[in-house]
Image (cartoon, rainbow, N blue to C red; front, side, top):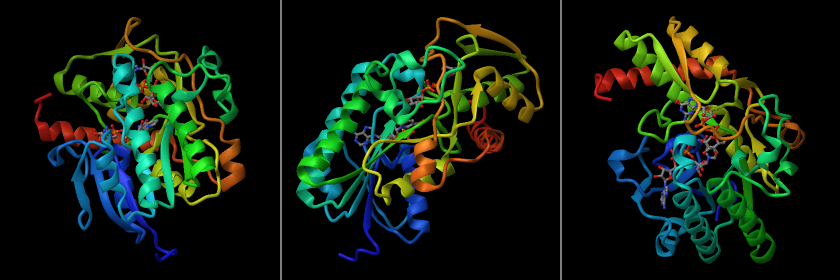
Length: 330
Ligand code: NAD
Ligand code: GDD
């Protein structure tokens, strides 16, 4: 094996972050030998040339063996997931991601993978620390004692643990990032799995096109989040993968806004002001969430820094182009 140039496999490559990651690795000269997703190729968000692109269900161990064969580095991003609208109503499906993570770890050991990256989530954090919009930013230690988001968050926390146990007992080097709400071009923007940045862009573009000057927002609009632009996510993922950080670490922006402020930003980009209505029965999740970046600054001397306004502008323009392409067929 050429240590200086490890071969890489990306799982979940037909999705948002995985698709960007494949392109970024290739652009840096990394040999991406394989990209895997359960979806049919026509449904992949992006497809890279010069890579073996495979549609495989990684819940099956034999498919994980096929996926990891010949790989030095495996990026495990495959998961059935989405924004609050999806994870609140599909807890069992989210829990079933444990099959993918279990079989990927077993296969990685069998095929001699050197290093595995696991995409965890801020949803692992204890809910009792996220009850107020003016939340104290979440430090890595705030995941315990455990009381994560029902379904999706419990599975992520369990799989983090499993990665750490595989490293301790079987010597498989694992790197674990807790992503905080990631957004950008090629992210899901319709269909029920979209997260709030894309959802608000879509709703405002639709309102503008239809002349209906109203927007419906889930919750009361005071709930807070931080949002990480995809370029920061992809860079941070590779930095964490190549680091010696052997415990879960936050990968998120620390620029916290409430949902009403997010809507302000999108309205300003769109050049429109809309009447706001609030759906207090819609999926809401925690009242406040932000990333404490002390650990990542200490270990990598780096943190996500792309301003929300700048990332939303790019995301808004991309969704606008997608809506124009589908010509109102939403
Ligand atoms: P995504 O849904 O766009 O991509 C995930 C991909 O995994 C999808 O294309 C899906 O088809 C694929 N997949 C699901 N089950 C599979 C299976 N059994 N076999 C093969 N492929 C399978 O989501 P994303 O935003 O790109 O997220 C990537 C990873 O990051 C996920 O693990 C997700 O849980 C995690 N994450 C994302 C965010 C975020 O804000 N986007 C936040 C926290 C964690
Ligand atoms: N999705 C969505 N759509 N959310 C909306 C909308 C809308 O039209 N309007 C307001 N919101 C509110 C939600 O009610 C929630 O309070 C907040 O915006 C954020 O919602 P999401 O972006 O859907 O999810 P999240 O931030 O609670 O969780 C996401 O990020 C996690 C990591 O930080 C999810 O994608 C998780 O899967 C992910 O792990």
